[in-house]
Length: 208
Image (cartoon, rainbow, N blue to C red; front, top):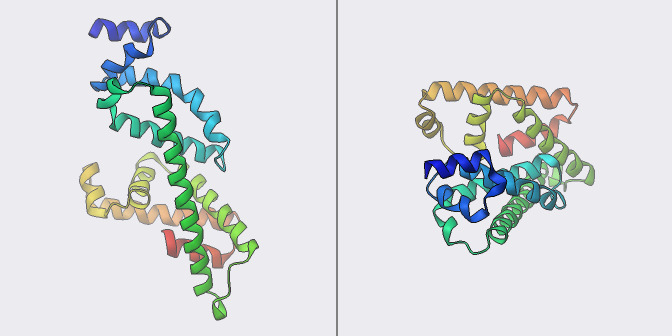
């Protein structure tokens, strides 16, 4: 098996997809990496047709391959790997779309609660909300790796401070300090970009 894996790495084009599935299903990361390299160029244009941005497309693709990796034990049972991976990618896109729709509903409610008489969010507000959400992604992407991971574990995965500390083998206070620094940096990043103060307050009330 070791010889086969070495040959797969040195001459991947000589081997079929089926040659990769068995070692990948057993947890061989190098074989899985070759599957990733084979399908990434196929998935990217497919997801880009529907995603709002290249950044969102990348996130969906990465989530897709995380799902594939978590289900790697099934790889040898899959009759049509192409169809299976694309189905996972489609489901990930739909999940992201549903989350965006819920986010917009929540943000609209937050704006109404912060306006006299509970006025509805205007089209201008909604455009700014989308810009803020995109700016937050950019700010998070520019964070140091450790802080970015802590932020994502807290905000995207919904983990508590103690859970993050346990997973990363660091103290809860370190996690708390990192989150505080992340939020301060993101607020400064958004303020520098000139986003309206009211929308910033609504955004951080709902999501940070």
